[in-house]
Amino acid sequence: MKNKSFTQVMGLLLLLIIFSPLGFDIYIPSFTAIIKYYNTTPDQVQYTLSFFLLSMGGCQLIAGPMVDKYGRRNVALWGIGLYGVTAALGAFAQTIHQLILARVLQGGSACCTATVAFAVVRDLLDAKESAKAYSYLNGALNIVPAIAPLLGSALAARFSWQASLWFMAIFSLAVFILVLFKLPETHPDITKTSTTLPLSNYKALLTNNIFVFNSLCCMGAMAVIVSYGSFAPQILIGELGISQYFFSLLFGLNALAMMFSSIVAGYCMNILGEKNCMVVGAIMMTIGSVIMGGAYYLIGASVWGFIIPMLITSSGFAWLLGAATGKALANFAHIAGTASALLLCIQMLGAALISMIAQASPLPLLINLTLLIGLMGGIPLCTLFLVKQEDVSIQR
Image (cartoon, rainbow, N blue to C red; front, side, top):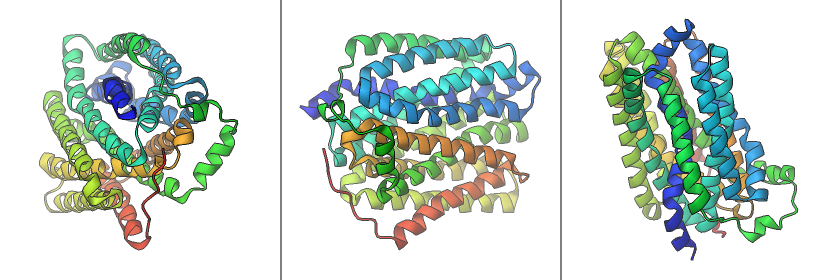
């Protein structure tokens, strides 16, 4: 019954989980246009991305217990509605600070849809199947970075950069209607009747070594992708002078690499196991860092010296993220919403903070990204080899 229910709601889960990357990727090509529109600095526009993720990460701590207490469907509807309203507010923003505020509120709403999507997967599938499902969701999720920049460029060229925000508002309305009529409540009885306080649940999660380690792996991998999304327009458009359209094509190519790798990783999960899939991902990220640093040392900053190692890195990200997510959540079916929320909080909040620190570094952006990739691939790789992390037990 669980597998059948999961198949029926998969399409809605994909719609729910793409709210976050849509809010991040669709106006990245308009980064320089926003700077000119508000006559502001790149750092200020960077905050519209970083604070979106900070808000999304921090609000997970509220959304998780709400998802467990009030149900998946109800929280999803509230999140979708707020997402659409804040997108419209952002389109009307008269100053960069008003836009940043709207983005903070939008990030808080996006956390609801992401938490619900992760919790529903854990409701409907056991731990091993959930790990595969997270890889497949990540693969489908990467369709958004492939399409959204092209869509954002087209909307900005035809109308203005605000058109991407109006698109998000319209998209929210359409998904709201679908969820209202089509998404069943998958909230299990075990969480409905739970009397455990949220703080006790968070304590149990944060004292579980497997949850913490895999959550930090997710955070490091996401920090690389967030920094890439923030740095790429500055490096490729601002420094190397490529067009917004060519940038969108390259950005989409990278997203397709992540999507393909996520699907392959999902197929390989049963063959290699989650830990070995994480090792493969960490190795690929480390190789990407070495190639990027070597290219910069030999020929300086160049388009393909940046993109080719990022393709390898992003593929490694896909292998690492799905397996680490599955291992982190495997033993917490009884508090799936809270566990999903804390995982996403660590992942998004940490990624945003690391990206902001990297942005503020006096070193060239490409060097900062190279070092970040090396650290976030190398540290998990060494840990996985040095520490024997047993396969988690399967709970439903």
